Length: 257
Image (cartoon, rainbow, N blue to C red; front, side, top):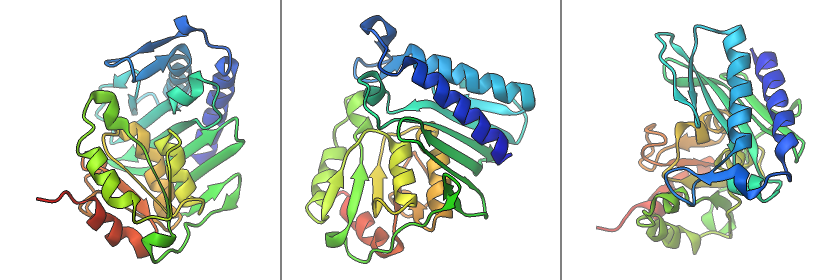
């Protein structure tokens, strides 16, 4: 299964590179909001991925960011983000990726994230560990927020709901050593898995944003939970972080009553 997923995502990455740096204004539009972009590349890449899946697993369900959910009684569902970081992509910024996850009965069992310009492919199978370009990866150990580098994003700004995102950001940002905001939740989760970041938090995301990354981060040893340390992800936000800072992150993200 991982071989199929890796082969498919590599084809998808190659397809994205056909458009990378070659988009015109007419190739990009807003969906629901002028700040929430979709390009012809997003649609072409998703169509390629779905075509490959349907040829191999025609009975499986599919949930794509651009095409929505397909009707299926199968316990298997493919969750696809064809280009995570579209804003970056349309500006020829290297920090974007393709994300594919296979869910079984509502939980991810395979996940793969591919950043073609960066030359990085992250993947995991449930219970089998996490890897990048064939080598095992592990999340970092970190015991204090003031030594932690964490990443976040502001997806909720796109739907005109900056609060409580800004309040939470201000509560935690001053406690951290550094905060990164690079524009792809999937890659942020992969970077937690590989020890580049100590933690990540964000709200207002879709399952396609985090489906693969949450599995890869967990298999790499990070704690992955929602803002209440439960598993209502992404509806109640997502945190992926070193064990030693998760509780402190949750406390910082709580809204004061």
